[in-house]
Image (cartoon, rainbow, N blue to C red):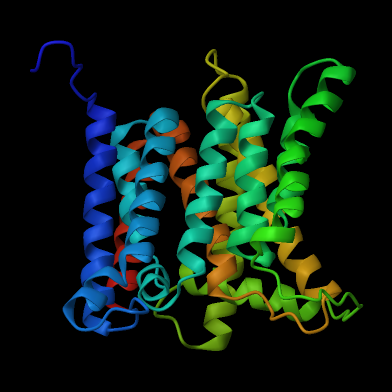
Length: 334
């Protein structure tokens, strides 16, 4: 070791390896598909540099997810969670074909990491929310109220909560002012109206989640039953784990995880619904914008299993392993 330098911790080494591995996989797949290129460049240079944005976004998403679950649930479940995210049916296809979805997903998971690591540093996660909503995708507008809600959630006095909420909203106001000279991801002029029809955006979000949840099942009736059953099981798992974590003696880790994920998921979903219903010409939620909900659900499931695992009997652990193996097989081969 070089004098004066500290070696990387095991967690940091795993995170770096995850970033490099996921980034390399996406870069190779995107380059083979020839989906991306750099304006002004031609030939090998363009095909090599074009996929860098989705590759870097994928690496950051996997690495940050691994760190979050590692800190909350341990290294083994963290590696499994990272693998599960990587093999989500729409994760790699999204990163091979889109320049909006990958950075939006990385921004959302990065915001979760900041919320967990510094819950009272509202200016930080407010800035991440502002960047996502203003310059990455308009459909990320739900990150802004999520940042405000998380600031209000913190256990401080009423005056302190209002101050933190104002600080979480300040970056968004600054970003809106900056758009006057720097532009934004929003199409101008912004035309507000009432499209209505809550069923359509909800159905679009549900389709994205169902595709990740029950891959390789094409029968509509069987798919509906499987989605309903697995959703109830996962919700029950999360509720039990949240209750167990709340009773634990170390509240700063798993106890903080569940409310943060809940606030962020509600914010993301609410933003998608509001964007679709209040802008008549806006597209419905798609894989590009809704896959972050599937990744949040994957992280929640992984942490919940890690919290409840010590109390399960051998047969319960066996069922969990069989279900995981079955889902992985369907996700990879389906």
